Image 1 (cartoon, protein in one colour):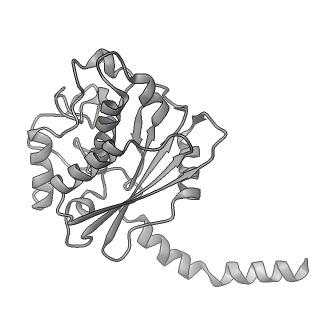
Image 2: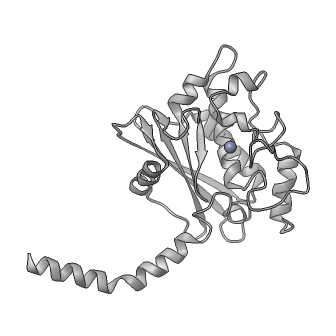
Image 3: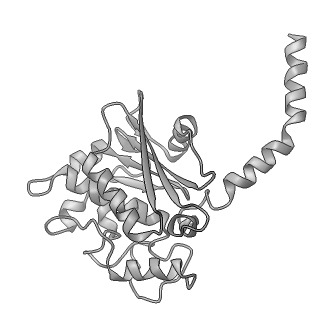
Length: 244
Ligand SMILES: [Zn+2]
């Protein structure tokens, strides 16, 4: 008992310096949604993006949705390579608070940006978001977002498949990591919806607010958009050029 205590105290005393420098590396832009946009868009610091996906068993990502996300990343960023890893884990919950989502990421996430690779963490959960049960997806940090697979399946309706909705939601949440719309920068274009901050006022943009809402069926005619519109793309180009 005594010995253990001594060892514990020594560890605590010995590590603060290391922890601090580790923290500096990890904090930077990572804690705030949209703040890593330059690191994600440009290739000067990180030439590769790795998508680390952890999903609750039975709620794995749709492969077409993942392929579309990879395609969009290649289209809008300067990255030369996008890699993916996927792992499943068990969960006994069916409703998650933001705090619980952060805890799960903390437990499941194994990779952070290092070397030439920027890492985006995508959590696929069963059940619903406790703070808003209409939520299909949520970007909650500079490098991570969550997808609610069962809610996406529930949101499917006669003419639009769950797969089409998942494609839109995954690109939408990635768009939030890029700062869209007006999250940490000010667009020269008037395309932010005043009723829904950080979302596009254009129904044909993937950044339209209803994309991540279970109300998507009532808000959108036909297939939901899964691409950025010209104003979104112009914002991203200006960011890459250092003008935003
Ligand atoms: Zn959104």
